Length: 286
Image 1: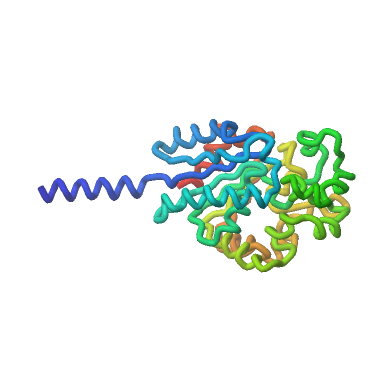
Image 2: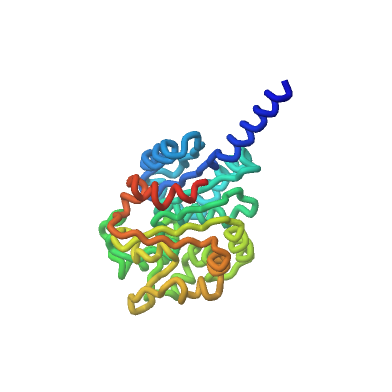
């Protein structure tokens, strides 16, 4: 009897040791949970038994609601998931806008249980470009969009909250209520928390590539962005890194920041390509 019990306990320990952490997935703009179905299925196919929480809220046009509103509401969902997995924790994937908002969810949740956060082609340093803009606001052009986005009305939209016009940085800092704060470019009473919560991660994975076609500049997926001459300032030369405003430098020095560049991948294929999922997403979903 004791021998059988010992074997049962051993099998239980092995199964717990080899189980994959649950995954929370945050969809992109103007889509919803259904758009992430392929990613969900692939994770569960290659990592059998993985519990996946596919974020259902703010699909379609509601994804344009104010970023802070979405973040604080999504935080309640993530907290519910964390309460279900207090010991092992979970991993999190945010695609496109969902990667930026998902990162902000972590920053506003001091006791989050996320171990690895994967930012999948997300405008972490902001967005500035006609191609992206015309997908949502066909009549706007990038050079004059600030006239809408850097207003009280414009800040009611998620896009306005992370629109980053390199030629109007004074207005960006004056009117933008979201991106300058979560990136600690403007200090607030929450700045220390915004940094410390990211420092809790075991892995921060930033994925993007030059053929994305939507995130502009594509290097924004790695926290790089335009200067006033439209040259992209590399991450390691940017203020957010050199001043370690949200902990990116510390994360990298401790081996926890992973910057991945993949060519020949369009924006809408990052979460639909088995090659991408298998080679650069699944390795971080232990």
